[in-house]
Length: 217
Image 1 (cartoon, rainbow, N blue to C red):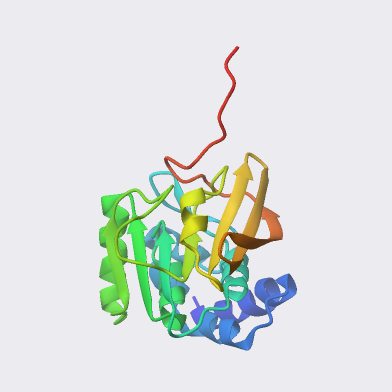
Image 2 (cartoon, rainbow, N blue to C red; image 1 turned 90 degrees about the horizontal axis):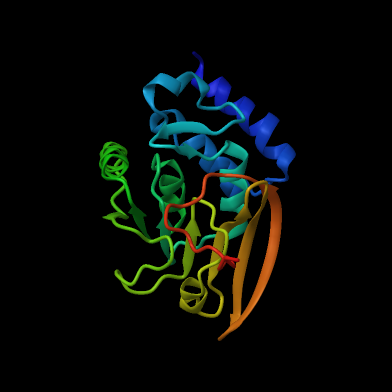
């Protein structure tokens, strides 16, 4: 398989038509080898417009979702990022190429260990992998300027909103069932936020995600 041609086709036929035009993002999609983060059995599908299973009911985002999320975040080289859900490690690697430090928290030991192996193989030394449940909050590792939830959440955790300092951003896919929206929250001032709904999508929900209270009759 000609991976470079497949990568070029992915960028030109999937990513650009989805309004991802930031040259820094497009260059990064060529630089970080997506196929190296895909399970071997699915490697030939690394550039297809689909979610790819990575085990235990988890998936890699479709390439265009990864690209839109990265473009929306507008990361700067001095920023510390918290990623909730390491998954395959591919999006973690994209974040690490643009940020100062990425703390990535994964609930599943197997996924964490496999991602760490890939980070080491690619010389990514600014990723700090953590094993734990960060679906609703993460109190370790100090403060962060950017927070990314890679699984969906029915409700945005207030704890994470409170962690945003002015200028900080949070990306999450919010909602339930088919009614989910990729959302970017920007902190404008203490306790003041702007919420932008970027696009509709549907991805698996984070285990132990915050859910609305249900009335029982």
